[in-house]
Amino acid sequence: MPDYRRMKVQGGTYFFTVNCAERHNQSLLTDHISSLRKIFRNVKHHHPFKIDAIVVLPEHLHCIWTLPPGDMDFKTRWALIKAGFSREIPATEARSLSRMKRGERGIWQRRYWEHLIRDERDLRHHIDYIHWNPVKHGWVSRVCDWPYSSFHRYVKRGVYPENWAWFDNNDINLGE
Figure 1 (tube, rainbow, N blue to C red):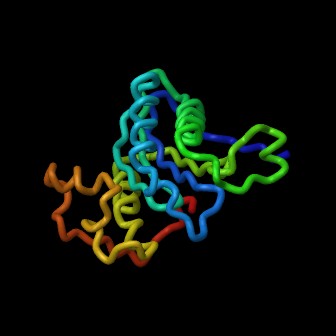
Figure 2 (figure 1 turned 135 degrees about the vertical axis):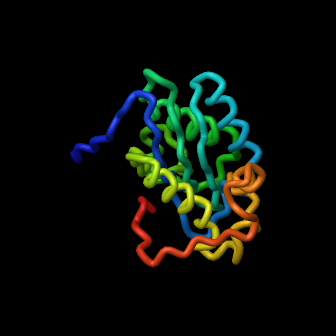
Figure 3 (figure 1 turned 90 degrees about the horizontal axis):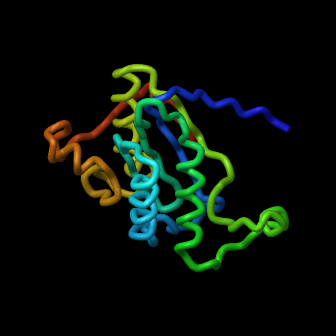
């Protein structure tokens, strides 16, 4: 069995990519965005963390969280978000025999990508990547046109102009 090692730093800031099990021809997350928001709020209430940036796409999401000082348990938070969302929506997805044996829904990929943010430059790069992602995947032609993104919050705070676009020829693979 593989040994997945995750960097855990108390009060750390992390970039995550979380995917639905079926990524083709799906709009599960955006179709149920109010349920996803509700679950995030509930988990944040019971297990506080700060969402520094987020984008929800139809079949995956990216976000950056900062955990409270002394806390490095992002695993529990993700388990609660995934399970809570799964309970909120109707069971219409196909399930493998393996998932049925474990009593799992077929909504989420079991694992997720996580990256410990190293410094301010790394943080800025990942925030830009998150906000550019709907354009990268062809959902919109302008970042400001995607409604499920913290980009709009950043525009209100004056961090980005509304017509911002990110062009980086050295785009790196950030876990998709």
